[in-house]
Amino acid sequence: DVAPVAEVVPELLTPVTGEGVLIGTSSQAIEGGQVIRNVTGLMLEGGDYYVIYSSLSDPYTPAGIVMGKSRAQEGRFVSTEGKDINFEGKWVADVTMQAEYNPTNKIGLTADLRYVQAGTGISVSATYQSGFDKPADLATLAGAYRVRVGSSAGLQVGTLSVNAVGSISGGYAGCSMTGRVTPTAKAVMQLAMNLGAGCAITGTVAGVAHYDALKKMIMAAGPNQNRKDGFLIYGYRSGS
Image (cartoon, rainbow, N blue to C red; front, side):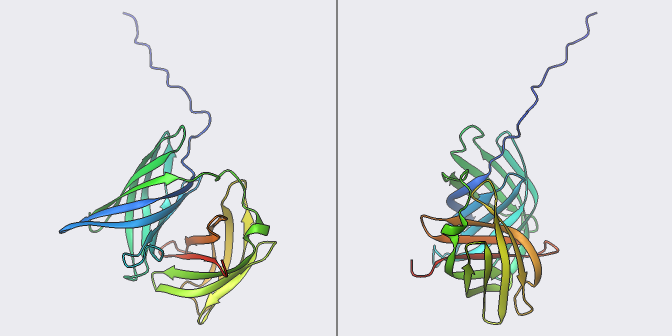
């Protein structure tokens, strides 16, 4: 007898990731209809993801952020350790994610987010934005911003300033924030921040930041030290 020949599977020399900035909508089925929200997502090469979703009362106000780590390969994301940090209800929920994207041209992404405890789901459809391969320019980023700072303790109105070398400072009533953003080879920056005793999340935290030069909008986010909560800083340049 002739032994069967094993199938040769081509080795994936360069991991295909879905990194980039995405903008779209989420949809959740409820009794009597659908809940639609605007979403802005940031997917990183290493698998970290941050998805901001809007308030129902104001599409320009963030109601929460979903963040976590995922595994990406050949057009698919899988995440089993996500957190939905809701600013309006002031809660944190465990979520899982399964998503699909086009690994060739990354036109769009579709995802299913599911709440572990409740078993309910949310679908997301988003489109990749161009320009992610262009590094952030600190000189363009530098300025003063009106921001909202969110965590499971709620949403606060505050300020943020960034100088030409990436040093940042700001805060809201009773909360002082300092730190630094460091550019990378892509349009995402590494973020290190120290959040004072009066902040909802305190201590030294690490995360990411992104600047949309066209909208003059900054977003920065990351988990707290034990990854059971997280923060979002989201806003626009003052005077723009």
